[in-house]
Structure formats: structure tokens, C-alpha cells
Length: 466
Image (cartoon, rainbow, N blue to C red; front, side, top):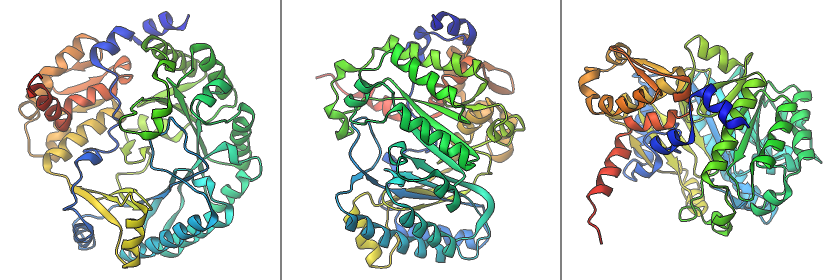
């Protein structure tokens, strides 16, 4: 009953998604890590830090701390994680992580601002309060944290029957990110993650009572054994507890890439039509419940800081998604972490033995990275402007980069004509504006500007038929 109303309200239907594709890339990272090279190593990273210290550029800092441990592997997951079998493995990891924090901190000791800290995983709350406090103390001793900055942590509700959200708040965390799959037990069993509605809602309400400034729910759809009725029940339960932000996450079945997904029977996955119904249902119900669509399937309450920032033209997009803080440098801490300094990207080792080995040598465990060229920076700026503000003027790009927008993006502008005819964008003489229905397919609009995707498709088209 929601699909026809949704289609007329947002001007989008299944045929439109089939035509333009519901592209999965979220463009927080451009280019994606597949294009990183090992030639960009710790020496290249340190050279760019020298440029930063010399005053060529100086931006605020954001820290990302990766905690890879989980109790068990969830079959739907596509993140870097390790099943922890004993306390010694965690203690060992913390020892090396704290050493890395110290090494990185020495490089930024004169920096006045760390505005954001994000604990991701894995499962950061797999650690107990004492272990988390050790990491926070290490950060405070080696970096200059801004009072009132954003301090985020990914939370597993299954661990909050015996521990306290208040303890996390007292440590300084101000934002909780809570993953929700589906409250139906059959769906949970199919992805090997039993997480009842009671424990999830308890975690959300506990975070609210503890005074968290922001609670973001990552709500999954398209999971095995999931249908519209089950998803509706889960959605309504989440809306009822009134979190600040809700992000819709579409499960992508890629067993050839993620081993954990190979246990999922593809015949258990909802079909394309049901997937579409679930997404549209969520859009309508969230809009009716007082949420606004920021973009990239993220919905926020009207009084949320992201909504205010978007209205005022100061919303930003980067490695951790939407932010009210200006573009900053990201320091990656922990196994597989991805960071950025100036026009560069870097990634730590993903193999834990190699990660430890480098730190044993008092060397930062940077495995690979990339120095972005001018074209990368231009394209990223265009995509991020569309993602944040739904509009990009040719003049604003030309003011920062020495290009003629229409000439530089002639191929892209020609391709965008089909998006305009479909009502997804408006191509003015001097700007590109995304319509409300276009915002629901912003990934697909941005992919037009993705040089790497275009090259990959061209190579694929040139492959001989066998």
C-alpha cells in the first residue's frame, strides 16, 4: 500500500532504479582502496606530514580507531573482523594499538585540534570499560582533543545487558551508532546474529537516558528471510523510540568477495521488488515521523545538527560520512584503518602479524596508499557537493580548479541528459541541481563522474567474447 503513494510522492519507481541502477558506492572514499598502491608507504606518508608541518596546508584532525574483534562472525558482514578466542589476543592488540597511538601522536604533538574521534570495527564494545578507557587515555595523552567535539562509538546491543551506556558516556562518547538487522528471529538465524528487539530497544533508551547527543541507527534491509511485513515491524519499533538519525543499509550479497556471506542461501534473499517496497516504505514512514532525508539514505530529525548544517551550506562529507566539521585530515589507528593527509589516502596492514611486526620496529604500520591527482580532487569535490547540497555551480568549481567546467565534463554532462529527462536532476546553464527523487539515487548520479568506474566498464566492454 506504500509503493504507489511513495512513487507519486518521490517520483521514483522500480523501473527508474532498474534503468539507472542502484549503485552501491557511497563515495566517502574516492578512489576506493582497490586503487591504492604499495609504493605509497610509510615514507610517503611521513613526507606529506612534513608538508603539513611546513604550513603548506593545516587542517583539523579526525581519529579513526579500529577494533577488529567480534564474538562471532555474522554471515551478512563485509567489514574486517576477527573472532577473539581469549583475553590474551585482545591484550596483545591493545598493547600494539597504544604504541601506534603514541607514534602517531608524536607526529601531531603541535596540532591544536582533534575534533572527531570514531571507534569502529569489528565490535568496539567487545572491549570492557577498562580496556576502552586505556585507549581513550592513550589518545588524550598523545593528541589535543577539542572540548565538545564529536566522540563516536559503534555499539553492539547484545553486550548491554551487563554493562552500562552511562559508562561510555562518562568516558566522553557523545554519539552511539547501533546496528539493527531485523527483529524477526528467523531472519536473525539466517545471518547468525541473534539480537532481540528487547535488548536493542533497551540499548537505545539507555543511551538516551545517559545523555548521548546523537544516536544513529543503521537499519538493514534486503536480508535473507526478510519480507515487507517483518521489516515493517522492525521499522515501526525503531521509529517509536525516536533515535536522532536512521540510516538505511541495503544488504549486498557478494559471496565471491566476502567469505562470511557464502553460508547464505541466495534463494532466501528477497527479490528486487520486495527490496524496493521495503526501501520505499521506510522513506515514507520516516518522512511521516518527522525525519528529513539528508542524503545517501541517511534520515535525521529536523532539529539535528546535520540538518541545520545542510540548510546553512556548511555540511561536509568524508571518510566517516556526513559531518558538521570542515574538511579535515584523518589519522587511522588500528588494523586495516584508512586515513587521509592532505590530498593523500593511506591504509594500515590488514594482516595482524604484519601490523604487529611493523610496530615492533617502531614503524607506522602503513601498508599502501595513494596520492590523489588533480582530476581525482576535482571529481571528488563535485560528487561531495552533490551529496551534501544537491547542487553544484560551474563557477564554484572553476574558482578552485583551473578548468572550464563544461569543457572538462563534456562527456559527463552529455550522459546526465538522460538523468534530466527522468526527472532526477536539472541541468541549468550554470549548475547541476539534484531533485528530491534524484537524491534517492545520488550514488548513481555520482557514478557518472567516477573516472575509475568508467575506465573499468570500458575495459570490460573491450574484453573478447569466449
